[in-house]
Length: 190
Image (cartoon, rainbow, N blue to C red; front, side, top):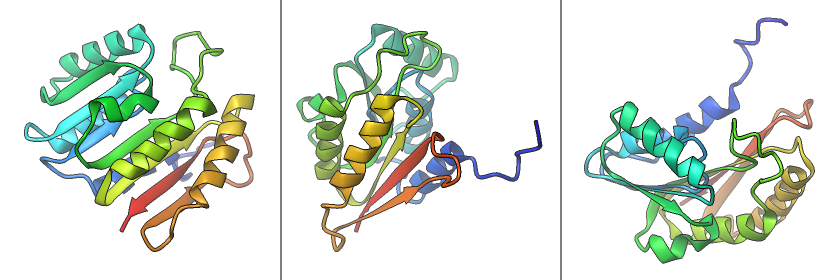
């Protein structure tokens, strides 16, 4: 066990990227609410005048997130939605300034077999790209430590390569000598 504080913390970096785009009064979406950490970050960033929509298919995720937001005193600017993130267009009609996906399974749930899947992740990401406002940002964290995570990452990489680089810039941030470490895509609309 060495001292790894000098290493890049990929999840902390995600927040830095978002803060370059997301401001008070904006609309943001947490496409994978999990235990609500990203939902809380987005809620605080957009403030009282902003809106946050958060999606998850597990009732437990909603309960954990609601409790977390309340205990942390988050602004009451959020809508927690028990639905798959590929149904985003049924709930979000306005352009979004930021979207976050943390793929994989609900942390601490013990249900590692219940993960995000390509069949819903890809349409959800495509819908998110369409909903992005100008100067909007989408962050998609991929966890290749399990088979579906690896396949999700490959499918997303292939999809992002098809986007018009004059309209959207997509960057992949990855620790290259640790192939099972999480990595993420940063998708920025010009």
